[in-house]
Amino acid sequence: MKAKVSIPTNNQPETQKRWHTWTLPGFEGFPVYVILGDIVKGNRDLRLFERAAAISFNMLMAIPPTLIFLASLVPFLPLNNTEPAIIDAIKLLSPNEKIFENVSAIVTDFLHTKRRDLLSIGILFTIFYSSNGLMGLMRAFDRVSDATKFRTGVNRRLNAIWLTIILMLLSLMIVAFLIFQSNMLAYFFQSFEHNSTLVTIISRLSMLIIMFLMICLIYKFCPSLHERSKFFSPGAWFATVMSMLVSYVFVYFATNIIHYNKVYGSLGSLLMFLAWLSISSVIIILGFELNIAIYLRKRSLKKAPQQ
Image 1 (cartoon, rainbow, N blue to C red):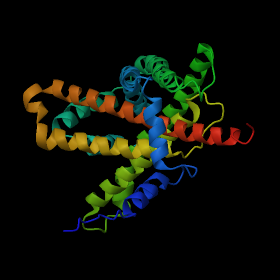
Image 2 (cartoon, one colour):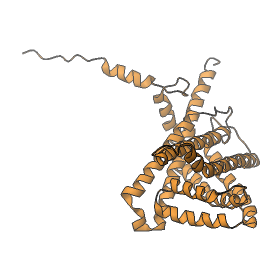
Image 3 (tube, rainbow, N blue to C red):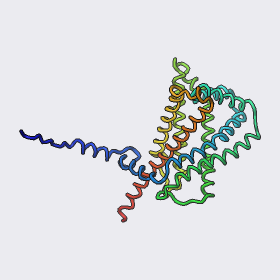
Image 4 (tube, one colour):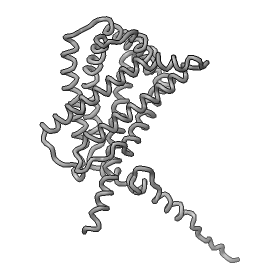
């Protein structure tokens, strides 16, 4: 009885070859497999989660003064009928009814009272703590010594302050957008039967674009690279998409599955927010590491012919 001889096929090597050569737009022709391998190797000693924890703390400290400043500024702006639009925007962004009630009560109190002293103090605290948050990002980014150059603490603080001012102006644009978008979209789409759904979709797409631009600014000007990356970078696309996905997953689990408010009350909202902020910080660092991996590959390719 003759033994059967198995003849190996070439399908598996061809599949591996395709996987090892598959690339994406913005990767400068480098395979995704190679870039992911560089990210994994580069983060073995850089303590990814420790860097993310530092960013989360600084960002957490920057959020309250920023919100106080924005809420104190709105009553001084020459805008009419802003309260219903702002309340509608808060309802659109709130994951559940409990958070909406708490936040809307605080915002309504700010809108009805002009606080000049709180506005002046708020802008100082906003610039200080927000620049601290950006300095935390800069320190986390600058730990990649092969791609970054040295800069002093004063230079880092000045860069953080002017970038904070730019992001604050962009945040004011977001506030203006939230005020006008409900009335404007309702006016344009009032003939549609399901205009509320359409307004919600367009509003979330607009917020996604604004988030993408803010991440692009951070990746462009926060790191002290020898050569600045492109404004629309692969890392910015990755961070934006993943941040939105994580946000929707958190909202879905918090609303439909976990029911944390029934167990922890208001403390549960804080715990969920801290978890979301921590994961978002990891995503921001991974997006930067993606840009760095492409940058280092591109730089080594340029140096190869010279050697």
